[in-house]
Amino acid sequence: MSTIDPQLMHAFRSKMKNPRHFHNVCKILCRQRRGDLKQYGRCCSMIDELSHCLGVPISREQRDRHAKWLMNCNVDPKNRQHRHDMWGLVTGR
Image 1 (cartoon, rainbow, N blue to C red):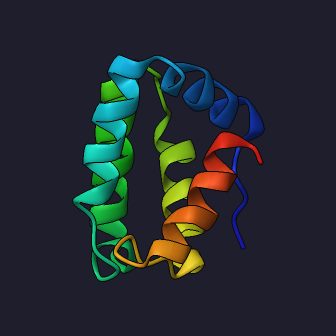
Image 2 (cartoon, one colour):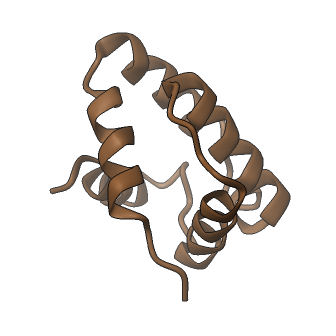
């Protein structure tokens, strides 16, 4: 199973602390559905969109690894508990 790159996650976290980025990231994440996050191409697209929004460069290998990791999480963005759990992961809690 794939893992998250700690340096990349740190870069994303530090950028999301900016309120301007935070709201854009929330919009991107809330548009997703469980089915979207089970498809490799859609996961890659979302990761690219987040990368562009935050101005954090990401290599193709990093994107592929994180897309595979996300697909294995079986997260449903419409489920309140899943959002809470994933937000804790994103914020480092």
